[in-house]
Image (cartoon, rainbow, N blue to C red; front, side, top):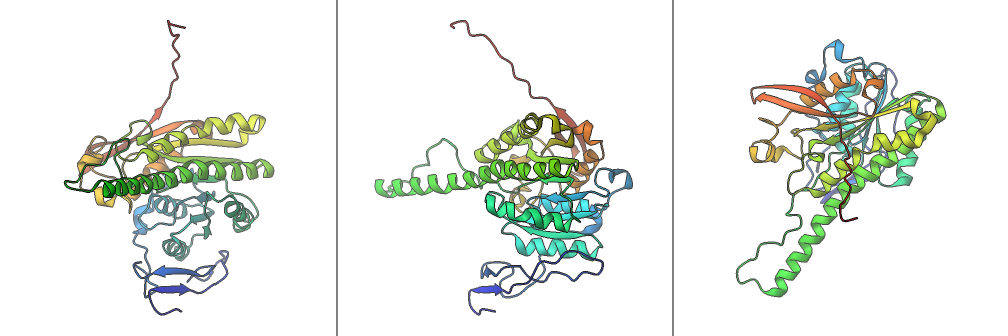
Length: 358
């Protein structure tokens, strides 16, 4: 172990789950935790979820029971993906793959928590925008799932921008030299668009690549696959300051149809749908949880991850053929102390009009 501003975590080999399998205590490859990290100076558990909140009535388990589930972006503690993973594992999934990229500390804590609860959970570390990295997970995931690919793939990403004034100039600072303003505007431009690019790359390129990989395996193995893409209500009712997030979530809505068209005669093997969620309280949104200016147009308060996960389980309990090609929007009604949740099916219609001047 290195003394100083960084901690080096020693290597181990990833273990498949068996009855009584040991917990994973560190990471497959050497990684460093900087001194600003919550884990710097120690190896403390970052897992904060209350498992009992993710155990749901048996009638909600039909869509998950016995499934081989892979969830992208599920490593971050307090995140939506973590909530989906807990819901899957604690309600009867046969196997749960916990995917993460940089959130490996939280990801391994989640795997360990699920294993202690008797769940066949395993970690999957990959950058879904790096095609070589993603491809390298293929044989490992299939091995962990008993020789078969996932039959439920939940494409999730918790990334968004911090927020910026898209298409607007920065406010002037009194007496600021022109050269200084130019430098400030340039840096603002670069930083903000880099955030947007990461969101777009992950949600569009990452979801596309994951779909291509696992739909291909489903067809090869002749194993049915259900795909669920996690989008946002921002896709159809955009807010300000997060243009990359809005655009990427709009793009996600096209994936089920594009996939079906390309599968052709194999389309019956793979079903796909999108869910559009309202504001959910996660590590990314927690700072806005008490700011109704952010979420107030949709709901009285942000949902907790267990509430969103329970609603998702209710939707998943419907037959895959019924959900196939659907876009489903989660509506929040009622007061902050007594919210009620309901799904609506959304149809995006294209209307063409002839132009008189043609």
